Structures are given as C-alpha cells and as structure tokens.
Length: 354
Image: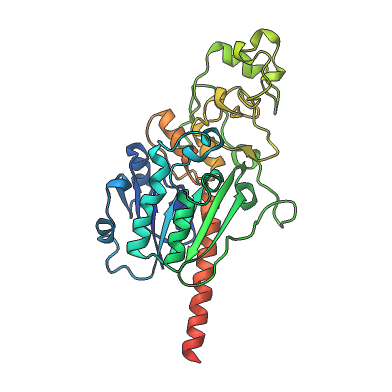
C-alpha cells in the first residue's frame, strides 16, 4: 500500500488519479475553503486540512501518519501562476514563489518514500541555479533521493488537452523515471479529442443546466456575445466575425486569437485556465452549441469522472477545475510509482531469498 498526502491539493485532481491506481489517500492540504468542500465530498475516507502550508508544521502532519502500514508518497502542485509566461518578468515579491520552499520541510523531516511534483514548465526557467526548483533538487540530493524531471505534454497521457507540464518523480528506494507517453502518433493509442470526452453530454443553452449530469451548467451570455458565438464557425474565432461585432480592443490586434473561439471537435482542447467556462477568456466555446463549455465539460476535459462533483460558485468551480492536475496525468504517474515499488520489492525479495 502507498499512502498519499496531497499538498496544495485543490479540489483533488492528483488525489483522484492516485486513488484510481489503488493508493490510499490519507490527507489533502490546501487553504482554499471552496476547494476543500469539493475535496471533502469526493474523498470521504480521507482528511482535508484547511491549512496554509507556511503555518503548518511537519509534526502536526506526522500525527496523521503514525502507524500507517506501507509506503508514503508526498504529492505537490504548488500554485503555478507565478511561473507562467505572463509572470516570468515579475519581481520576487509574490509569496507564492516560495511555497515550494515550505514544502521542503515536510520532505526533509518526514522522509517520504516517494515525491511527485507537478507544475508549469516555467518553474525550471526562473533562476535555474538558485530558484525554488533548484533548491528543491538540492534537498533531494542531500536526502539521497533518485529522481527524474521532464517537461511532458498532457495529451500524450490520454488527456484531451494540450497542456505542457513539468513533472518530477523522486524515490529514496532506487532509480526511477517519468513514464513514457502512452498516446500519440507513434503510440498504440491516438490522442483523445474534445468530442471523445464531451460529445455525449445533453445539449443545453447558455445560462442553463441539465440536472441529470452533475455540474452540467453553462454560464449565461449577453445578447451581443450570443450573436458573436452564433457567428463563430466550428473551430473558428473572432476573426470570422463581421466587422460590426469586433471589439474595439481587438481592432488591428492580431494576438489573443483564441478568445471567443470555439473548440475543435477532432483534436485536444487548448489548455484550460481558471476561467475555462468563460467565452471571452480563451478558446472555450462549445464546438457546436452557442455557448461556452459547461462546468462538467471542463471537468471532463480535465478527465474527472462524472461521479466527481464540484461545489461553490460557477467562478469558484471553474477555478478549481482549471487549477487541477488532470486526473489521467496523475494516474499515469501513480502507475509508474506502483510499478517501481513492485520492481524494487521483487528485487529485495530475491536478494533475501538468495
């Protein structure tokens, strides 16, 4: 058995993926109360700790880990906004940049068997020699962990979304590697598409919901934006509109071409953000219906099952979903950890029997 503590757990994307491969989710830690309601409802056998990691001690967490049989895994996906492309030039004053440093003390003092870290690729580009990731890798070296660090594409692991992520897997039980892609042109399985995941959901209108599917609810649109989406072809965007519908801020501006765009049916979606149910904040228009994607459609594109329900306002649920680690990505990493433990356990047994 591998026992998991999910740091910065949010609504629980990582926990859901690791639970799917048979791990025991002991606790999730986050300071977002709305995400905590979602987490607690979906992980009733686990403990949600509404804590700011900066004011939480390893000894407090250790109380939840006493006498647990099996191995221990710490997962962490610290808030990634300070390390996105839009923030790479900002000064170091953002306190979220230091959250990974606060995670250090838990690894250092509680010595988990495995560590799983997920973030945006920008985390490794900022102050490579002395930034938060460099300091964390130095800690792993000091504590004699083996680790592998790679920038991967979520769509290569069955996620219907073009989302690049930085993934680190570490183990103090021996050499370990980030698993190879399972989907794509050179793999046995093709990339999942938007329509693979949302094509069977009941049709709804902007501002409406379908109560037969949890959280299948779409944001309302102004009459002008309804006209805009009606004038947007499949896989089209604002450049397809007649001139009288163009926003003044977009006149003569070629950037931000995804805003007000429709998703394509036959390919993965663009990366979902914390505003993934808003037509004006990305290519979040439904492929065929005149609205933005619903909360449930966004959740499916993050590979959450329909049994996983979200709580809070529409904006809060969108934020929880956009911040989540895609479930199938976490599942792939969890499977790699399971395989690694099985391998080292077999090796140890062979040595003992020999």
